[in-house]
Length: 438
Ligand SMILES: *Cc1c(COP(=O)(O)O)cnc(C)c1O
Image 1 (tube, protein in one colour):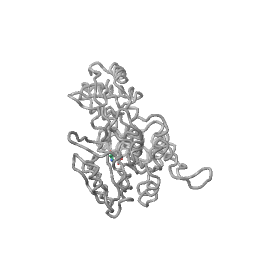
Image 2: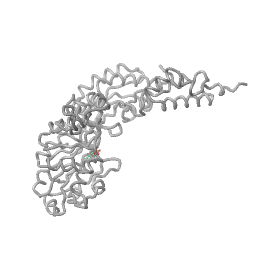
Image 3: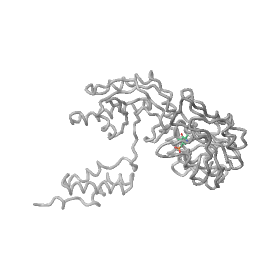
Image 4: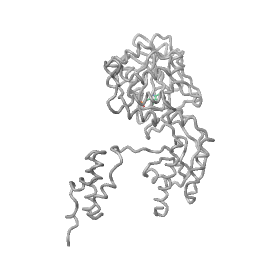
């Protein structure tokens, strides 16, 4: 009996297939070869015929040279850490595409000389916060804090910070440990629940580098509590640095307890640090805003180079600041009355046997922000068993399981994604209802 394995087409034969050549131009030869080797192996294992190897290899080629997938965020969590925090606006995505090639990020095209790196993004940020004497951008919020600490508190100088603000952000990342890791000492004041202006005043001495106020963004202490507002920390003779966390540049009407850069600076903060990919809705980056002399010292420090942002980030940040409303701020303005008609339309387009229902839902800000705030939302409720198939579909959809149902919450879903959501549910249902594709 002939051994079919002897008829397996050779790698170079399959790679000569025009479809493979086109794919190799697009994806690179490594991914294409992987697809070929996997298809040959399936033939060797007797799963497919030798004549099918080329077709199977073509069918298994990835669309793009990244394993990252676009996901529809139907969790009701606007800034979802595991889904990459803020999705970029279309304008920001376009800007990233433009900046990806050779670009004038550090060249002044009028003079032909070196220009200030990322000037457009920095000017856009400064324009939105006129209270800041100067601004700088680094890799993320933690990098912004690390740079301030490194420059102002190196050599074991101390940072005065309230015990109630020694925050763990997520994934074991603790702000006090970060500060110590770049060489600062901590001078903790107050208790877990209360701190007074006099606690700070008594702690500040000649060894103090700065007073740090950290927004306890992901938890609330309620009951017998007190903290000291920024205004009352000025006048101690040392800089006041405020880590606002979420990156709001001005107050947000729906998030009254969320601190913002403008208010902190007006209250007398010398420096404000924040993340770019939380409520601002931009790329991962860390914002530093404040007194011009201090910002210049940070910018000029050798350590700043290790925290430098790349051109793609600068492009995305500029477009976030100057372009149309990005997805995160857009989601924060959605109301149940906007979402309900969309949910109804989606339900009507789904197979009746799924018994899709329009239900009220509680959305949240997420990303470790505004933990007390409920954003009233609307969801499509479906059978729980669809969750896995939806995650594994062509366009993965991630919902939320609640009381035995799968909720597809529309708060963080852009209206343009509704069609995709419908298609994804139909496909997932086809793959799970009595195993028959439909
Ligand atoms: C999120 C957050 C950070 C960390 O910012 P990253 O951009 O994640 O590095 C620091 N401080 C506060 C208060 C935060 O909320």
